[in-house]
Length: 320
Image 1 (spheres, rainbow, N blue to C red):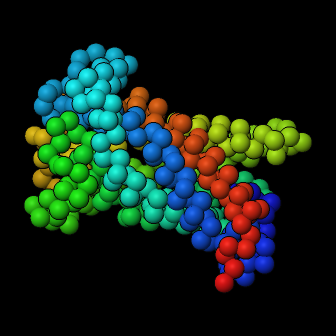
Image 2 (image 1 turned 90 degrees about the vertical axis):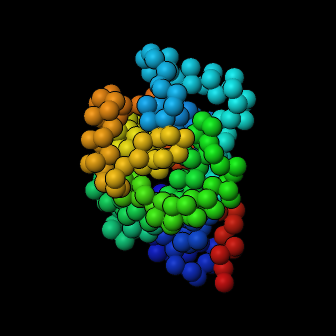
Image 3 (image 1 turned 180 degrees about the horizontal axis):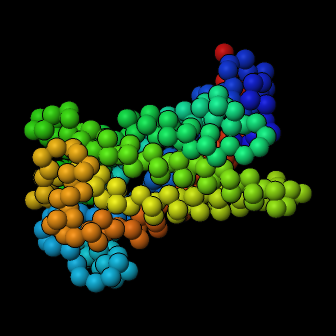
C-alpha cells in the first residue's frame, strides 16, 4: 500500500492492469498468504473465544469469575480434557477458507482504494473505510461457510467428525441456508470492523512512516506491525457484541445451544440479553482482542512483505 508507487504502470514489463505498482493477481497472492499465516498462527486463541462466547448457550454453564480467570480456566479445561490438539479442532476448515477469502479481501480493497483515489497524496480515511467495507462484503461471501464449519467443530463435544462430515450433515439436515445463517450479521459486524481497521491502519502507517522518514526502509516492518496491531485491537474491541451474535447464530442448535426463530440480529440480541443479561454480549472480549491484535500485526506485515517480494523479486511472473 505504498502510495508513492505508480498505480497505473506495471512492474518489470508486466502489461496486465496493475494497482499500486502490482498486478491484480499479485494482491490476491499476497493476501492469500497473509490470511493463511494470520489464522493458522492465532487459531488456539480463536478456539478460546468461540468457547467463551458459546458459554451460557450450551451445557455445561459458563465458568464463574472475571474474564481473565475465565480465559485461563477455558484454556486449562480444553488442554486437560481434550489435549493440546483440542485447541486446533476445526483448523482445516479455516485453512480452506482463509486463503481464498483473504485473496478476495485484499485485492478488492486495493482495487477500490485505487479507483477512489486513495493512493494519491493526502489523507483518505473515508476512502480507506469505504474500500474496506466493500472488500469485507465480498470476502465474507467466500469465508462465511467455512467459518460456520470451523466454529461448529470448535465446540466442546462437537458432534462432527471433521470438515467433510460437518459439511455433509449440515447440508443434509439444515440445507444450504445454514452455511449463510450468520452472513448478514457478519457483514453488519465486519463493515464497522473493517472501516475502523483499514482507516486506522492506513493513518497510523502514514504517521509512523513520517516520524523518521530517513529510516523508513529500515523501520518498515516495525511500522506495519505497530499500525496493524493497534488497528486490530481497536476494531475488535468495538465490534465484540456483534461477534457474539454471529457466533451464536452459526452454532445454534449444536451441542444443545439455543436456537433463534430467524437470522435477525435484533431478535438474537434480545434473546441473548433476556436470558443472560447484557454482560453476555461482551463474552470473549479478551481473547478476541488478544486474537486480532497480533493477528492483524502478523497479517499486515506478511501482506506488505509479500507485496514487496512480488514487486522486487518476481516482476516477470505476471507476464502473459
